[in-house]
View (cartoon, one colour):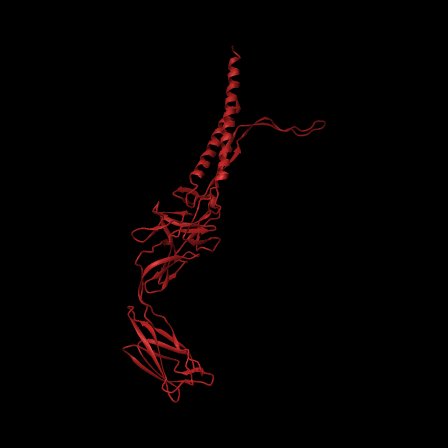
Amino acid sequence: MLRSLFSGISGLRSHQTMLDVTGNNIANVNTTGFKSSQTQFQDTLSQVLQNAGGAQAGTGGTNPAQVGLGVRVAGITTNFTQGASQSTGRSTDMMISGDGFFVVRKGTETFYTRAGSFDFDATGQMVLPGEGALVQGWAAVNGVVDTNGPIGDLKVPAGTLMAAVQTTKASFLGNLPSDAAEDTVLQRTIKAFDSTGVEREIALSFTKSATGWDLTATDGTTTAAPGPLTFDGNGVLTTPTTFPLGGVDVDLKAITGFAGIETLKAGVQDGQAAGTLLSFALGADGTITGSFSNGLKQAVGRIALGSFTNPAGLEKAGGSLFRTSVNSGAAQVGTAGTGGRGGLAGGSLEMSNVDLSSEFTSLIIAQRGFQANSRVITTSDELLQELVNLKR
């Protein structure tokens, strides 16, 4: 049987595989986070008709004579170049700008994906809508995310509560004019909260006397009279710098006593009322920051990203998911923007990186290669027919 017949058959098979890969690329031209593939060919074993001969005295060397036995698919490589950005405006759509993969869990198996079109289920878990795979990351505890701990299922349920925090410190700052008229009264207030988030008001009243400023304070239930304020020659408050009022340490250290200026105001306090989650936004480092009904913002979680030494070694698992293989290496899980992992952009998705002009060119090449190899088979068949006809 002619060797060219089997070479042609191997060419048909290989170019059919190339057509399959190209067709799959074109079919996924609009698939979020899809990475195109390319087919590489290599020749198969060659049959030796004549071995090489070395040079001898009076005789030159001879080259080997070999006949190839066809072609085979050497590999199908995934192209992980960055896809274009598509703005969606959805807060749950996330795009990786650079290297890395979102980490998701489906059952007991961990997968990796570039498709960041996430959604929430009835329990508030962040999921891939088509697969139901659970997005992995770190949950915040009282607004603090520990990225050194193990990753788990991310939850951002509606109605998430921000706990109330009791006020323990409050401050006032600014300048009390030393040359103010006698009996001038300045009043300033600041909000404070108890352990359940009940709000009360701390009110300070500064009254100018012949010798300086007198201070009284109240929170509605408790009253304090820390005494007259004294300043040194440089306008710095010497006493009282702090005083207790209903369990709150009131700090006056930032109050000064220069002439001609009145800038007294309330500073900050460390308590807060309870609040419920109203909305959230994604930072470039993967931190999910929630906006709460009490007017405050707090981290509620952080998305984990995985990176690989050889991402081309990942296996496609369907549903825009990848799984690790022995040649991809283990996932290096960490935060966005560190360890070679890219940043995140909220409200955007990564489009497919399929280049249609390149794919249609590959389609033509594969078609012509298939036709050429089919012609080899036809020609080989004609030669065999001539051989059979020798008997006539």
